[in-house]
Image: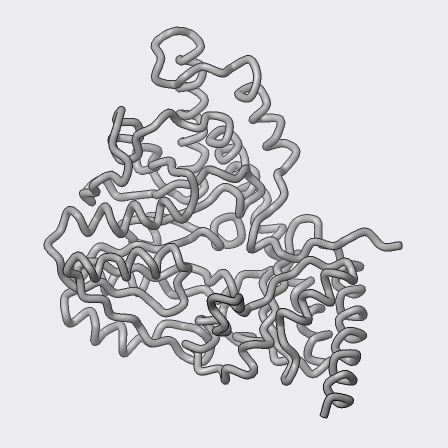
Length: 382
């Protein structure tokens, strides 16, 4: 009997044992409020300061530019809503492949007088450069384009886009949640005004994230109160989670290059197997995260296939947002021009630290069996 295999690292990652060890004191004896002036509080404040430095170092920022949040969704909302509240309503530019925690606050800003324009992307999921230039000529106030897509893994040329946005007078934000720890991410080199990252995407705990923000950008807080995090995110800090976040960033930085090379090799094996089975591998020729593979089989529903794979011991994700409330396939694939019928078959496999070559080989074998079985059922139904 084979042990279950986790292949959904883009959704969340297991807590690294070393991160857990770093957190334990702050779940036990070191329970002070970091705003307190006594010894317990000073210990907690020192731990947060150390974690802030670790997070900053992981993305080439200064520690004073790190604002801790509860995660990536809050950080994205903090930038979009906080920045828009400091500006006169104008033009907001995003892409159609953004995570919902960028898309939805962008839509909310429309009700506050902002105009929203959505960039076109090409068939490989990359921002259309000509359309971007056209929108920059309209002098937007805010631009948000993710660094790496959570479904396809495609990496956007954010440094190039940010330079154009700056020249147009816009504040540029990038959601780098999927990128940090997997590829080199440098806040200065990217030239962005703000960058989002999340702890649980890089083997840290749930409930911690950060917005890296240029101090020249004026933000209004989402949460007002005691003035923590430079007044941008009030509330007593989650010390244990923040300590774990910092530890996870330090480990990710140390391991990134070797792990990226290893995962890229596993991805190559996986995509070779998928091609042999007749799958369409999306964005195969675009720059992508090393461990992300997004694919589909014609005439096979992605949700059904994911369910079959789950029962066979493989945890992966459907690219479809299908539910009783939202029957639409992946918005990312539709924006790329993929036919809805094929997009409904999308499955995402994301590899991580515990993924081994034997896991990939067995996945290909089991996937082939399940695909053949589903095709047989379809043939009988016809």
